[in-house]
Amino acid sequence: MLKNFIPVILFLFVFGCSQNSPDERVVVEVDGQKLTIKMIRESVDSGMVLTSNFIMEYASQWATEQVLYKEANQKGFDKTEKVEKALEETMRGLAIQELLNSSVYSITTKTISDSVILKNYTSSDLKNYLKNDIVLISYLVFDSKEKANKFKNIVSKKNNWGTEINNFSGPSTANFEMVYKDEASLPYIWKKISELKQKEVSSVIESPIGFVVVRLWQKYYSGDKAPFDYIEPTLRNDILREENRKRYYNYIASLSKKYRVTYLFSDSL
Image 1 (cartoon, rainbow, N blue to C red):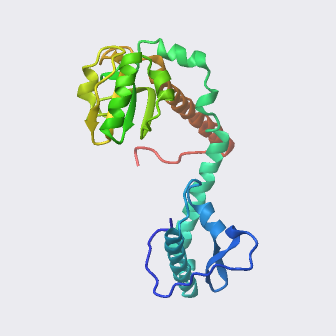
Image 2: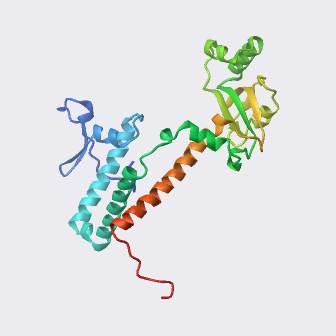
């Protein structure tokens, strides 16, 4: 969304009838500059639904910004020293970031080998140990206690969580299979979860997020070695961050030689 929205009194909302594609329809026009549905779609999240109200609000903001920018240009504010300096700094920052993305930060977590991750995990580094209790659970959230109880009763009898999730006809509002959680992520139902035994299915837990049925697979306590699949994403990010830090300083060192960086001051000044 465009920032600094100022409502406009006169708002032109035109859907051109002559365009072949619906996305080419013109929503608003300011002094010959047109805003189309396609332009709006390209500026928002890809999964967002463009409702009529959203389009009208977006178009109003776009038109407001256009008339303000045109007026600023007419009065010469686009050429002031302050604006030109800010523009230069913005372009400088964008160019530097593009350079670093291309020359330094081109590696990703996927390029880090599994052997490097495993070596890091088997070390005695304190970051590989849990600071808080965590649990490995599966849980479903229902919008009614009746549906939750029905599922709980079926699972308790047949003792096959995975199969019953697929077979259960009652819809759930959320389904989480084999996820790690701590108290901070599920504060309202943590006490009930922590009381479960391994592979036990909970009774229906009423909570702010809905009616929850949980199956506990494993408990891990503060001070335990973190499960590998739990900590692996963190290890990958940490290794990537350290690798990028090394690549950055090596790159700067090479550029300092290329462009002859010479410091002409001392702490005695």
